Image (cartoon, rainbow, N blue to C red; front, side):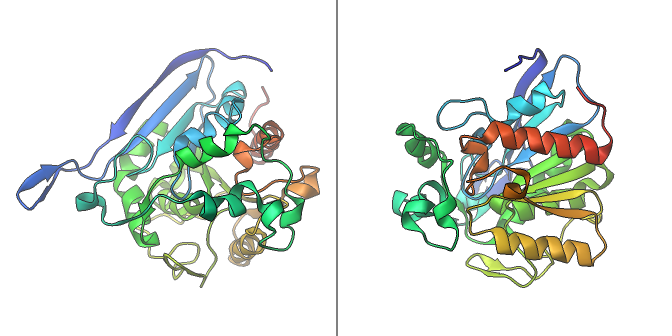
Length: 309
């Protein structure tokens, strides 16, 4: 593995106006962004948006201790920004500001879907899952990263919209890499960021038009509610990326078809069609994560006409 040099790294909280609730004052909706700037950076950055009850650390290191996607993009010359969404990661969940939250998930709830789908076989094709790390502690580390999340899709969207302007002031022109329930939030951020968002890599994004989800109905295309931003979030090159062994494949296909029917520049990438097999929903954590990162970087540089590194 080739190394890289950094000219800067750090992080900061993105904060909004203080909230007064029952006579007590609290920080408003807040997020945390960590950044890594390579020594000779490209003009275009990459911003990671995590899913569900997760956090940005999922992109920094795999649960079996290997360098995560952040490192691959840095080696390719991209400045990288890693978002901990409001109430996630380094941000505490204050229900007086963010509203109610779901409880932290159990092993029984997440393992059959994320870690051991081949054993549980809860959907057709789950038996092809073969890429979760064999390191015994990997599952425990994954579970330790999972926390509360909003009780509605709308609340999650409004949370990220509240910090979007500050986020884009940090990132400059950027590519959004969203994952899972972060998918609808990536579209919402793109509607706020407009021309600053050069492309979107939507990794198994949640949602399709009309989908009735436990946390809300997708009544606004690939999101639940109308976007706060004025830009068309889909007016840029988009890759919807699906693993071979997840339940998201049909949902992702319908999402990509929705984009294509609207005339947008969108592609549904099924990894096994490119020789990348056995992946589940947490592909950035799995044993071939480097291979997937290299594929994504290749797609991005070709699609945007970026110089090689």
